[in-house]
Image (tube, rainbow, N blue to C red; front, side):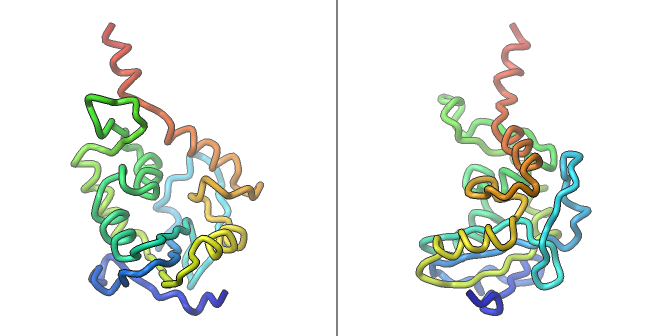
Length: 183
């Protein structure tokens, strides 16, 4: 793995069309770690190209769609990164399907999704590398960088309590407690 093969994509200044429609890996760094809520924990991060690396992901199909459409341009129901960041920023998940609210599919309200999109563009930088075996590389990247927002497949003891608290926060269903208070 040569980390120099990663290409930087700045969503604040770059057009999404520069992202390839190919499978691959991506790293997410944050311009200033102080912008990331930490739930009161002191998180430990590694640097990549002078910024703190907070997440790594893969797509088996299309980096353009995954980064530009799902993470930046869609809603939390299409992006675990968006869901995680939204929960950290205090947004309350709501069911995507009001007829089946317990199916586990959530998003944020439209205003929160817009604010989150702006926050992501202003604070995050993506680094991508097209390749045909992204899953193999993902494991190595998680082991090397221990990104604090990678909740699954990250067994590193560093940041474990933060990840457990974040997992708990993401699992909350505030709409259930709101309806039970009405009774």
